Image (tube, rainbow, N blue to C red; front, side, top):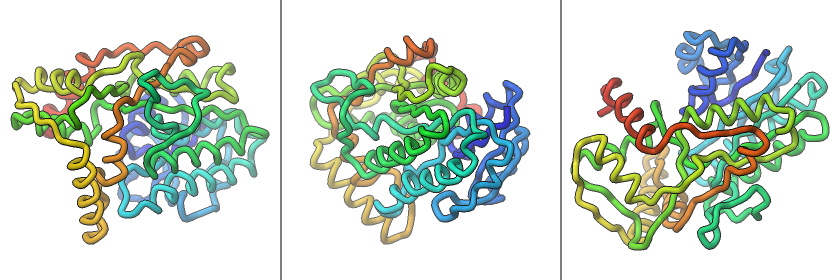
Length: 326
């Protein structure tokens, strides 16, 4: 199968590219610059250079394409506007191009986020029919990206996926938490219990492939997660076991978290740097529960996460060590 993959230079996209190539698919990757292309070419991918957020001429990139996996998106920004440019407008441009060649495409798989819907209300796992209530511009931009993707549904078979928080080898954000715990400190946001659904990268790729290949998935939306939620204490303790430390637990009040996010955002704007932790991420971090049900994906796709938190954290730790990141 000939596949167009966006976001291949990212954490999840890189894992998906390796899987697609191992399955024998021909993969064309859309990347912003030639400098980022070499690692993808070494995996046997063909490269198309361009920026989805600024260009609308993508019809030629779709030549002879059977399926599109759209993972490109923005998680770090210098301004709130960039979330919408990278997650909504970029999707719009790709969808417009797909509409021009729609009769040739067998599938369009759009990878969104749990953040597009928002945190769990009352602590119950969200289901696919939950109403949208994002708490950040990142979440709202991902929600609007879904709206753009659905415009294709009259001409192209569309599937929308909403992963929970993803971790695994190559992921850099959780790396900072590993480093902090390795220094003997485990930060906990707030004083009440917080729940988070995590999914290991390989399990997520399993779900993406199932959704892309199953006729049952056409026109459907699925949450993809681990099948259970973890407290932030559990996550930190598992990391501590891996790094061999017994860190001091420090609870940080929500007001301090929000203030730190606001200060970091101002710093990013003044220095023209993309800052991961900003006021948007702080608003997400103070929520008590990010939980989603994967029962629909289990029933319709046969999705079965295989990697436990303990196994996934140890695999991630071993990879960080092997690469010299820790």
